[in-house]
Length: 451
Image (cartoon, rainbow, N blue to C red; front, top):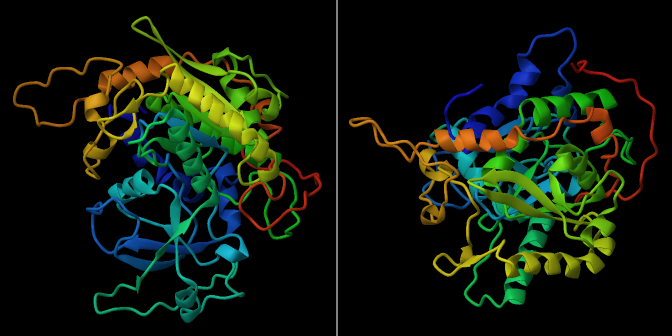
């Protein structure tokens, strides 16, 4: 649907309710494939006590407990014009593993709060401290399938106030360490490179799960997808609605980081002939890909090619033994892109310069002022406002059209099963407590047939 909104803003209004609509309201003789995400149970959820976006950037705000609920889909985390974009298959699910049952998950009814959360999440999510969790009745019996709701007292305003704390995430802290190493390598003494500003992270599929797999797990409660569910989810989220691709072509990052063989397999298969250098192909290992320059061609604007260096590597937290020797090569590639001008340091902001294109995400959604507006180089000139029309941030309709032209040049996609058939995550690839690799179990295909 063409709304005329800037893509980065439009995605907030589409993604936030998407899984609920597909699960609860979409008709059909069979459950929609995305109902798979409901198989992961329910989790402790929170909302802010205020209306509208918080006045400060952080996640720690006046917060109330809402009870148990399924998780909402996730949009890109960080600045929509961050020059480095880290890509995964789908968001990790806080609260699944026993050590994280006290995790708190956002369930906002205000789109601005949803946008604010993902713009400023950075390296942490939220949780209760252990003492509060136990005081409210949390414990061993509190699982995603128990239906157990915490006994949080109601205050005079009718809210159940809680005091969340930051829960730093290993993967996001690892991203930060790469930025720190890059700044040291390039001798940028005044650099303040941080996750959320210089590096954003997002996923090819937007529904959270603790694992992306059709394989049974060592944990018998962990629900693998059927291959039919996997194919239907990918068709709906990645291909038909193109949530990730629309965001990718709005961000136009200078560097794309792809960690893990499973993500590499899907990314390479889907982007196909858009690789202008390095010729990655199905079956190429991340170890081999890391040792050569790979570039993704977004397209050409005014005769200037727009490209990103794509850096493949083993999963930082899932395969730390494999990532350790690969780390220097990742920094080498980042430094090479900085040396040739693909990544540029801006002394004015203390951050990396923004890539080509424009953005109105923060001001239009009224969540923050934009610190990078002076750096933006729109793909197309915005139209002149009609005299007397309400003043808004510069219209992004020409920008949206330019992004769409670039995106429509994508190659014809291979069948979903061919592209995503090698994306199963072995046990232990995420920050969970499993390590044993499960064996494949034949399961009948379920879910909606694909056109």
